[in-house]
Length: 404
Image (cartoon, rainbow, N blue to C red; front, side, top):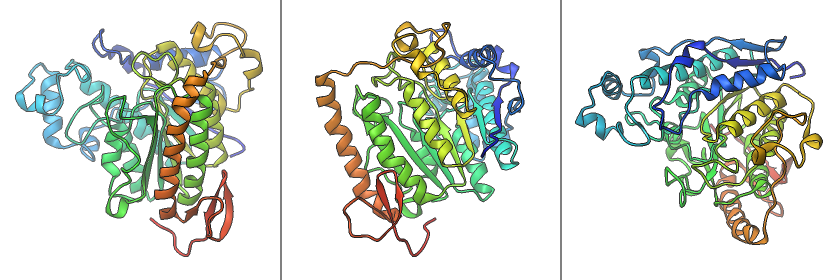
């Protein structure tokens, strides 16, 4: 993709929609990201287009969510929370009942479906929906600030069009709702790097959750310990993601770009800087596949907005400003209003932190390369399988048939 076409999906209608004031999830992040892109000259020029989404219809939403659940959701939004609605997860601290909850979800779903349509039509190589990423919503249950699962719907739309879809989730929280949607399918591979369920909601997403039936081996979880820092995170990313992408050969990548993995997020316990975001974006660009990205988590608002803007800038081929920003700005000053730009400075890593993190990350890598890789014809270095291609340090073993 020498001339990459970017589409920023944004509707002014969402400015009037809001979660309750005391809820950590802020829909206003989308508008703040848009303003940041405009201020940096990263929106509104040829190839950097702003696209208006549509609101998803009830029929579209029913492609994943049950009619019974949608009835209860609409009833609760109108002020009538029933016992059945409570059993469906409504009315908790993480899924409060408020009048805009259906509208927020419907616009988020419509924006992600718009992004999928742009990619299918060849009108975008990278589409970004900052309002999306509601990956915890189940077919019949709300959870984790999520009521309607735009990611499941977008992946379904792409798969129904005959595309092999890789869903890559780098949010600090496990993508349990998306995992459930495709756990028995091979046309959508789900790959989630997240803080371990031992220390973070939704308390699952372990290495042995690998899919069932036709989906066995197509659900990959990379749980990471609290305190994981850039170097350790990228060691897991490079060991696992490029080999599986090479083996799976997706037609399109759907990226959940939650920024709650950054140091300083009030709800999570990872210690990353947004320099990791740049590396992830560069890796995905190297796969030469269209990417649909969505916002997801991120509860330190300024860090989240800057991280998303940095991802957009990287996909747009913007000049790297890493040398300018070292030691300034970023997660410590929580500001991008300075000459260095959007990049975080590097964070120090203590010996104690390394001792706590490195063995756990190594064990996770070993579990996945031993249990998932063979299902895709992948062999670890030093194995006896015949090598036909190099893939990020691991080897792609010769295959006689293509799975999926």
